[in-house]
Amino acid sequence: MHNTKTSSKIKRILYIILAVVVGIFVCVMVYAFTLISNAELITLGEAESYTLSYREDEYVVRSYHADVITPSVSSTVKATSQGNAIVCVKYSYFDRDFYRFRVVPAPKAITLPKTHIVCEINQSYELNPSCVSDDHSFGLSFESSDTKVATVSDDGIVQTKNAGECEITITSYNSLTAKATINVVKTVSCVSLIMLDKYDIDTDIKVLTDLPADIENYDAHISVRNPDVLSIDEDNQFLLHPLSKGECEVTITLPNGVTDTKLITIDDYEEASIDFDILNQFPTLPTGCEVVSLTSVLNHLGFDVSMTTMADEYMPISDEAYYNTNPHEYFMGTPYTWDGFGCYSGCIVKTAENYFSDNGINDYVAIDISGCSTDELYNYLVNSVPVITWVTSNFVTPTKDGSWYVDDELFTWCNHEHCLVTTGFDKNKDTVTVADDSGGYSYSVSQSRFMDVFEGMGSMAVVILRK
Image (cartoon, rainbow, N blue to C red):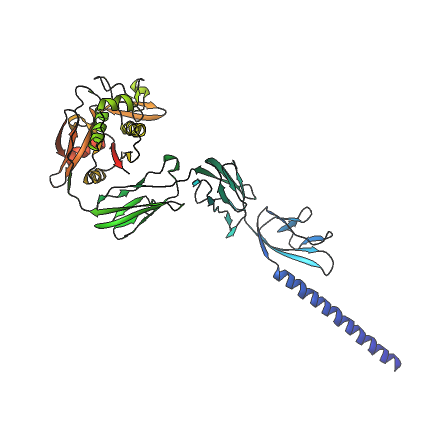
């Protein structure tokens, strides 16, 4: 009887011990499960390493999915293959930290919204690179090639310092790279929209500005006040499409807040005529029709300058043989003799720029509008802007005279190359009016003939506009 009572007590004690052990085990499991559940999910790319944080000097790292996350040296683990894994940092039996990992494919590329950025001095710019795999964005490192020009923070914020150019290199953990060129320019304190006042409803509008050439990629923004009259091209905000007749304000805004606004009118223009006095190139400049046309336009605008002064002091002239000369850079030969060749639109723009620069003229600009359509050319005439135009003598059909290369660029010269000033049009009469310096008089040709010759000569044209 005594033994039976003793045995029952022992059983009760064992049950209690067992219950305590089970309770402790359950508590430990609940605690561990809570730690694991509350652990932040860390996403890595294949072959990416991660350094665990630890609270004590002595610890043991264990991966419960070593084929996915593999412990390496010290507290560093490495993503070995795609999948999910749990890693434990053990300090004692009851003191542990848990990490949850998700391993995705390694990224394959770094992309940038813009790879050439123009900024002013003391301006910030966020690069916003993208390095993504399986919806995960990977961290990147940044380095500037010249910290005197611009520095870059760990999160990709560029801070410009001085004028110049530098390159920002962006690198991922798996050695992918992308580069962004930062062009730092002096602060732009003003900007002008170089636009006409009137545009034909059938002609797209190319927005021009007086921003210097070295900041042509400046992040300027174009907006329109009345989108029912004008729309902005989806791919090029500096190209506007007329939609209906009416008035509309066009505004340019620079990143530093500088703006300019132009009010323009869209209508259907059938004709235009400019009262224009053309100079006669003969007998003084028998092959200088291009510089004579430019001089006539300058005189029309009120500038008192002679055609010989323009030829002698401002027009770039090459002593090289024509086949070694770029006609957009230089006049080939001399305009004073019959064996001179001539020049193209780029040379006339340079001639005008030289004249403006040497005489301190800042409110006019020469613009090469080569490649323009006949309708675009008409827009200038509607606004009383005469157009220096490349055609042929007597509007004969252009025929190839010769071709040559300069610095790997091909140039072609046509027989009877000629330059004059276009001054009007009449769509109802199907005519275009020109002021011809080959004799110093005006006359009209059919629109179709004008267009065929103008386009046959490469649609070369230059205008002088007031800013």
